[in-house]
Amino acid sequence: MNLCNLSVIKSLMQDAGINFRKEFGQNFLINPMIPSDIADSCAESKDSLIIEIGPGIGCLTQELASRYSKVVAVEIDKGLIPILEKTLSEYDNITVINDDVMSIDLKELVEKYSEDREVCVCANLPYYITTPILMKLLESDVKFKSITVMVQNEVAQRLCAKPGSSDYGAITAVLGYYGSIQKLFKVGSGCFMPPPKVDSAVVKINIYDKPPKVPKNEKLFRDLIRAAFEMRRKTLLNAVCSKLPHLDKKAVQDALALIGKEENIRGERLSTLDFINLADALS
Ligand code: SAM
Image (cartoon, rainbow, N blue to C red; front, side, top):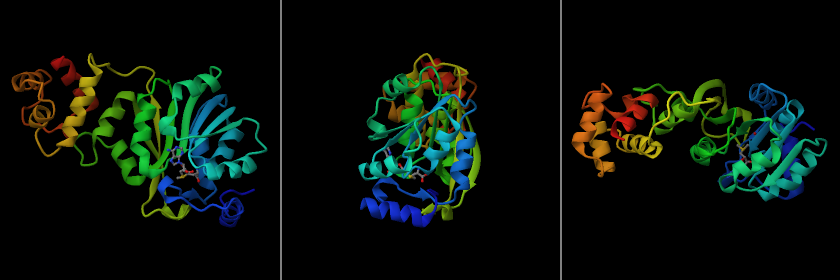
């Protein structure tokens, strides 16, 4: 069954008595090359556990299951579950879980299914919730090998941005602590049904075995990034002092001088390592 064929998608959904649900970010892939290319690039070892978020009707799930030893797919829409039971029935290495990925205990899930395999995430993410999902994955205690996801192209640009550029944001600075990111390829809106308003791109985050430097106070490191980007038009000094009033202005000035930054620098010019050094200088 070609799960990227429009008539197949429509008839599966009609038979199940459901429609595309915009509130769940349901834009299904209709170009068969894309799920195949995503699956090819998401893990190095065939003996990997792949966690898929949002299998939809299973087009990417099938590609993953034919390449890797185990796939666990988490789908929020219970209307899609009978369809997935049908479309994935030939595969004995797929487990579908009907749940919201945001409320799932990822550590527990991985402990249950990994059997010591490397764990990778692969997904065509629902766009309404891209950043919270990425943050949840990165901040979980799970040692993922990599995270390969389709996101809106502008989000991909933000994730890959360099310090000082207009696309560089809080998520970019935080991401730099966990891994390195590469943009794999762009996907036009015509590859989806229904077509989204914007183009998309697939990115791969290769998680570091060990972060290049661990801040002494991880919470302060995160708080500094949040403060810097919530008030990105202000200087970093003013943004930090207004968002984190427990920090003394003189202490922040001294910390900036200690890490070799000017007092009037904006937060968007600081790399992940600069934020770590600043947090350490203030700790
Ligand atoms: N993988 C399919 C494809 O590529 O055609 C569907 C991708 S579609 C962009 C996003 C999928 O994520 C939908 O199936 C949607 O129901 C599901 N989804 C949305 N929010 C979710 C959540 N919080 N937890 C799990 N799945 C979710």
